[in-house]
Amino acid sequence: MPLVEAGGIELEVHDAGTGDPVVLVQTALTADELAPLAERLVARGAYRAIVYHRRGYTSSSPVQGPGSVIRDAVDCRNLIHALGLRKVHVVGYSYSGAVALQLAADAPEHVQTLTLIEPPPVHVPSSAEFRAVNARLLDVRRARGPGAALEEFLTLVIGPDWRTEVEQHLPGAAEQMQRDTTTFFDTDLPALLSWRFDVEDARRINCPVLQVSGNDSGLWFAEVRDLVRAWLPQTEDILLTGADHSLALTHTPQVADALADFLDRHAILTGRGPE
Image 1 (cartoon, helix red, strand yellow):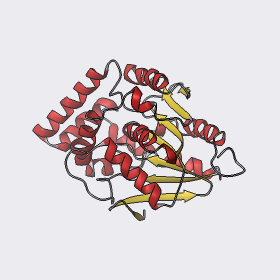
Image 2 (spheres, rainbow, N blue to C red; image 1 turned 120 degrees about the vertical axis):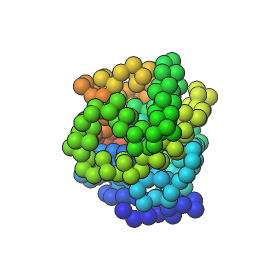
Image 3 (tube, rainbow, N blue to C red; image 1 turned 90 degrees about the vertical axis):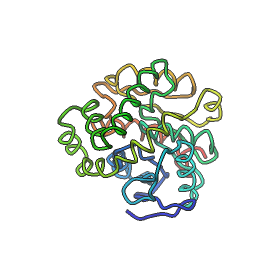
Image 4 (tube, rainbow, N blue to C red; image 1 turned 45 degrees about the vertical axis):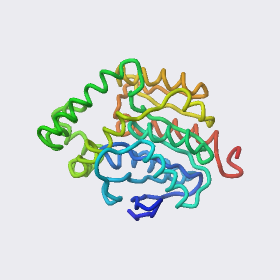
């Protein structure tokens, strides 16, 4: 993947297709989790899908220490500028849902639409439980190292055969996650746990919003659905049957169909919809 200079750093970018530009913000840990979704968008022939790796992942500029959701949003905005784009559709998934929300609030002039695929449950009623789980993982990282913390985390969320399951959906991902695990624990998790965002921030978001969730994702993400709809009343809400928090990989065709329908109705390019 080529490197693009954006705001003084380099970001690895895969840019394919023609049509409305769609920026898919990399989530935490798994660098290419949104790549299959991007491929399906490109195959439709109406979208330019831009998938990039955030700081600290693969060949993008390195990072050390705690990160910041705001900084990640600035990096995304700088990438939009570097690519010479004015308005884009923005897609965020899990951690990058927070980045997408922050970008839409801080740089609304660049965001034509906002799509959120199960953003993180850091501000929901049961967020204390979510934060406690992450604090425990950080304790493991400090005591036994990032590799042990990664094993515990993925065994918890996927199961003991997580390597096999991950590789079935995204070949090469297990090795990439192990290689970039320090970024996940030392940069992304502190960034997420320190992220501040509330209804006042959400009021700065006026673009159309799509939320895609799985009905098997549990209480945390059910509360996220309610919170996003409360923050952003314009939200269109799609709930996928039989899907959990891995829905971007396990239910890629359904997510792509919902996203394409939404984007078609809010197109940027002349002749495809309103400016």
